[in-house]
Image (cartoon, rainbow, N blue to C red; front, side, top):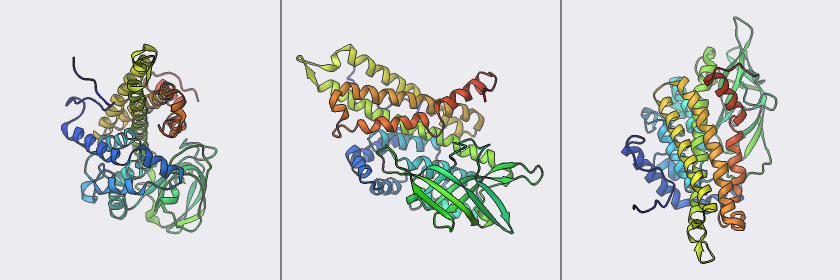
Length: 397
């Protein structure tokens, strides 16, 4: 009988991951272990950014691994960036801004930005010296791009952008925000989505922290845009292709959110398994009891299934299949969110009272995993998507 694996790291298989990607996992995992959950929690409780980890990840080329090589990135794809985020999460120190800055904003600018926009932003996003936040969610519209109330109107050669956004991560440490607004179609008069890069120090740009019951280094903000004057080149890509460009960023967001929550799930499961192996009651490790072992085994299965769907979604996206990636990315995000919630819940239950102590770092993950069910799109909206687009059922809304 072979020796048991000591972690929930994926087994080596060239069918699923190449040797290069396996090597990337191992290297990132080593970086994550150097920092770990204790470092992450200390920073989070002090409301401080994880600058040291961010800088080291950038120095090693991990933050921009998905961005074009000609602009300082690694020339790889979302598959590799998802590996980086998952492994850091499995070590107890997930970087939320990786979802936003290189995955969403970097991808959109790399695919649709002008050459000047690429030169201005991509090298900094790749080496971590610049951070870009993403603003889509609104108080009344949520993430529904068809009801967004932030509107840009022309004023000569400039744009004037007005509106309000909520739950925007990391604005206080971002150099700029990629905002989703709407512009008027000259032919129909209807409003259509458009994306604008807005530096944080632009006049008329105000932001305010939202008190959250989350223990995380990144804070959430509401943003107020009051006739923010922007030059013509603040518009990203083609004004008439806003929806296409938007979803080019939202698919990586779902894939990366899945990787984020998978990392958390693996950290929680590893903690529970280690405890179940060593915690002795009535002269036997508690892991010998099926009441403990079977729920943990079920969590391991669910994590692996969610990872496989995440890998499929990333593969489709990197291959240029945006439609196929959309379905898979939604499914991956749903599966990872559910697996993560169950893994953290079962880990806390396995540790009993110790599961609620700061020492083991699990209690704070209870609220963190709920984010995976709610954001960036709720599990209910994903079920709506699958019902309509996969099953062909009538639209419910």
